[in-house]
Length: 329
Image 1 (tube, rainbow, N blue to C red):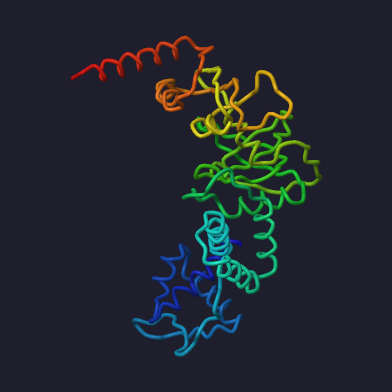
Image 2 (image 1 turned 30 degrees about the vertical axis):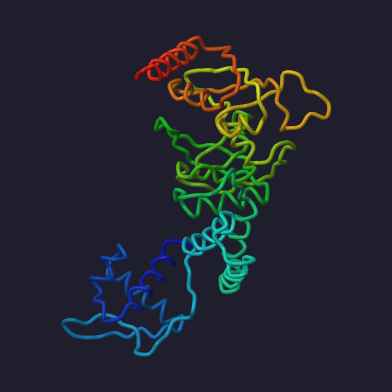
């Protein structure tokens, strides 16, 4: 939704709250000049909203007595927040029996939304994936989120302005594969067309996004959620860790999820399933090693540290401390 349209809706909400609002008050709340407020009022009147002008020292604008707004008027941001809330709630199990209320609420919202907004929100929901149970998420720009979703659905390149974790700004052309909600943040994964490699970007660090001419083909292989998890597991960090752990995939993943570590079988055996104990190679890239010894201890499975030696020293030090604690009377 364009900014002027959003301000007109905000003006309507202010007037709906009751009483007479002065031009100066409305201009201050909307961040515009007085003549712009008058223009917005004229737009409401053109939409058959009965805005009355009150003359005098304390004059201004008010809604005609008895006027009732339609049951639902949402901006893009509001509609996005409501529908995403319903989706997250359904995934987290925060619904009533048979999810009836959740589904009917979504249907009602879609029916009253302008068609162009409803289409964009449906596009976003089609492009969205979760890596785990959703919790509290950061808030990316709604227009960026919807534009990227359009790019995903129609396989169109998108130009984005991005700021990385070191504060460096760049403009990139992205072939977006999907939008993923992971650990409280929104990400988009796709190919950085300039370098021809897959990248994962945080949506809250994208300042602007626009669709470009042309199209691209989404490569076969893992879905967007798995690509994001793999990107985190293989990101460049200070320490590269390689372990051998004897156990099942489930036992290891309970302590070292896919967003942290990658697993590889030493020798695959036909018919062997995830519940079969065997030696697995585990690789991690981490900034700090100190958190790993307690995790390895909590696994309660045989393990071998292949690298780095510093981790082996930390594990031995933890074992010595635990032994000394146990001997204390």
